[in-house]
Image (tube, rainbow, N blue to C red):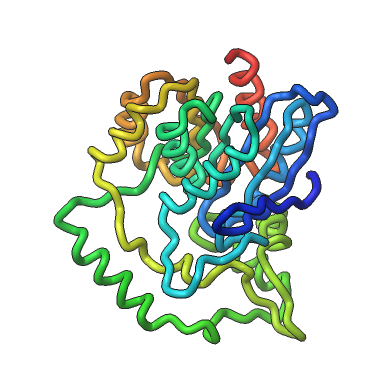
Length: 286
């Protein structure tokens, strides 16, 4: 897929996987993964991006990137700062490809630094999760209680890497053995005879704050670049078609397509090529 790379930012170190084109003037593509995934999420797409300078990040707390300090949450806007900081390392603008949570981050980045984002591609995501203002107190209360009880020495342990692959296959969304194995390979570590997840345990805490629909719409309205939204027919929006259409109608400039596959349709070997072809065609047109 490429070589390991670390972006040394002023406030943290962000790891990733990078593949540079032989053409020095090639377009830049920066890929952002979903919750509890890592840069290997783009393993199946990367070979199709050989004409681009392609970098896939490990978000903070994921893969080989630094964790946030103890007592810190993982907010979307913190990921936005990390991403903008990586973009600022180059004078050129980039295409952003974001899957799931990474799509929400990519949307916010495109809204606040339009000069750094040449185009936006979101994969099975139509923006940040929301809740109503009247739910905010209970949401924060639940999250703070979880943080107060957190202990570093309590974490899930497994007897083999294969056990972790099986756990990942049956996680929040279903994954094939091959797709799960790619994520697990970059997302686990072994200490003596015990295997554990590499990601920060605080990532599993409930979010302390979610935007409301009006806030999400405000960000979407500021996205002026060409935008392609690819939604998985068997993904997280299969029962939320109206939400997808509502969010899509708020973009100044968007192409929306539903494609066959599950939430990780960009990683699954059976569907990744069709996702890559849509992305390539859209970039070529814009």
